Structure formats: C-alpha cells, structure tokens
Length: 186
Image 1 (tube, rainbow, N blue to C red):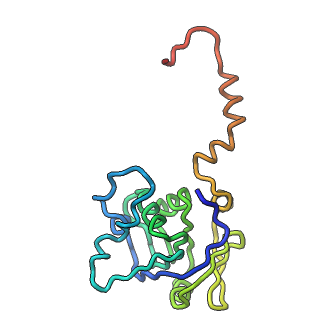
Image 2: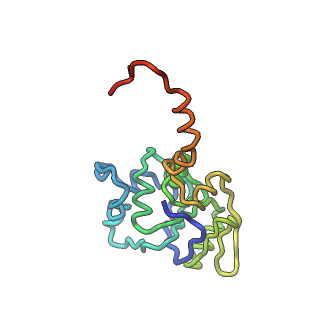
Image 3: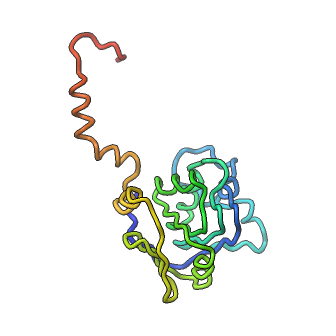
C-alpha cells in the first residue's frame, strides 16, 4: 500500500447521494480476487449514459452516504484502480469507510457546503498529516482516527501491521513449543 501524505490535483464531481457499492462496481465484475483491473468497470451502468463524464482525477467529491450497500472490498479497489486517491463526501457508510482505509483510499467527511466549494474550485489539496483540505484560498479540517491516520501515512495494510508484531509473534510461538509428537498436522 502506498503511503499518503498529500494528494494534490483536479477534482471529479459525482453530485449524487446514496451511491451504493452495487453502483460503484456491479456484481457481475466481482469474480476476481486481484485488487487491480476493476477501474474499467467503475460506475459501469451509469457510464453507458450519453451525458456521463467522470474524469480519472486524484480526488472525487460525492454526495452523502457514499458507499452504502453491501460490504465489498471491490468498491474501493475499483475507485483506486480508476485513479482516485481520496473521496470527499458529507458522509460514508461505515463498512465502506473501513474498506477504503484498509486499501489505501482516503475517505474524508466534510459538510455539504465544503464539498460544493471543492467541486466548484475543480482543484484541491488534501494534507493528511494536517488533516486539512485546501482549495481556492479556503480550507477545512477533517477528523480521522489516529491509528488509521498513522497506517495511511506509513502505507501499512493489515498484513504490514501484522509484520510489525513479528518479534511478539515469534516469542509467542517459541513459548508454546512442546516436546513430544506433533498432533496438529504435517
């Protein structure tokens, strides 16, 4: 997972509320377990509409309750594979938010006015260390769990977090060693 410090660039706007994970990545594309290759299917059904235009910018601004619906990791995988590194919305579904942060995608909750201002500006900078979004001479502070922030700043997914405990795991396994026959398998 790539560390996140600042994300600077153009903003894509998807001004819709209650975007669920079935709309983000439809079920027929969930047959793979790799984390890549899903971006081409992002918002698949909407992308068929003639007036659809969602540039692959580093920042996506969306409506409230983004990522509601089923708890599929494929949704953040598709968003990230498409090119988004941060999503700014008035609210997120809890499981979606967790799936994002575990996969290196930064969900930022700001009020609707700030979201509208960022969308109108068309460009923004997200500073994770300062917990701030900046656009057009304006800024807004966002909240994030301190441990989630640390993981994102250091680029640590769940496996990397486990490896941070390698000494303790080895000590536990060493202390549990028993003499005698092995009964737990080959």
